[in-house]
Length: 412
Length: 142
Image (cartoon, rainbow over all chains, first blue to last red; front, top):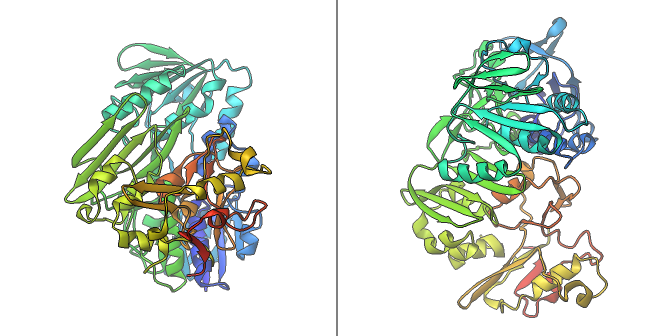
């Protein structure tokens, strides 16, 4: 069997490990336009913060990962076309690579909305890749004096802010939405995080946008102007779906896959940020560009490509993030009956619907949050556990003795 | 593979497993030096309520969500056991978000901490089990 994987992020690693769990011998080729071995993309903010190093980042998997798994790597190469009839992928300069089973792990790319005068800005970058982080690092220099403007108060923009806030003269984050982290948090917890980040010297301009750039000056919709030295564009990401669409795979916002990570074209699979997931918490199809999801979809693709059967039908949005020492864990959907606990340092919201936990937000104390996540993923009926105890805190005490014997005692 | 299993009905709620865990992973030469006047942060934790108590530590899952979701590659499976490379861990807590047992915890050093079955300390065998006076936790194949 001849396996080909396009892309070299977490989804690709999941695919490789999934294939190798079933098939030790088939040839695997990974083609990626990046020159690096796989690294955890979310680490780039920690790199700028000094919590990791480039060397550690590039050891997301051990140095001998590709060799040990018998993977041929083609790094720094770009795939231009997939031919599903001939079962080949075409590279730039005309080279073709044949496949029996193909997995598309092309990820996503930064979305840069059209903004007047953007071309006049000299120091600008997105914030997605290791090269972006290196570029930003160079633009900041070592004088801690740069005025930085970040467009986008989502996870990428705010993690970027955390990565650089100690290394700048001034840091402003602007977003069209009226609150920070609009896709992850509701209003009240967003305000808690915002206040905390502001206390570290970051300025937010919300419900506003840049209408024009003139080299180092941004003019806002509201009329004001901001002068800056470095611009970071973190508005959002778009899945890389062109290769899949061109090959005949059904694509809407992302590549459509089933529970086996198979696309609509035979022998072509897809995994990670380029795909559409089924979010079981909200019971809706959406793009879930999160690392654990990419791994699970990749592993599922790999095992199925190698002839085994694996389904992944437990995708939910979920995020663990810290901002300047304040931790936050969120998962699922916030549509339902709510249970709120809040004091000075902590915020906890549980959301239930039809006898199930469907979502939660925890800020500050995030201890054992995975017990909540598991209730959502496993769709545990709440009348089978002690909901009063689970409301109080995540604890296995809330389960029946028999269930605990399974969880802790190895009973079946 | 041998794992730490819980016999809930035999747990006395004495917390000795927690003390032995904290000592075993302290690097100190005696329990007194490791524990006296210290707030301990063990990797095994007792849950207790009314007359029920039981210990919870890493299950060393064969299909660990924490390892799959780790953004830095700090969590890996070594000889069947889930280990943490504290030097690689950036403290994002995605594993805390993922673990269905609540078995990983934060530490003062920024990295997360978890049970490694005492494989990396000088004892080599789970000290919590050694310290349990009533066989409420055992280290065996099941």
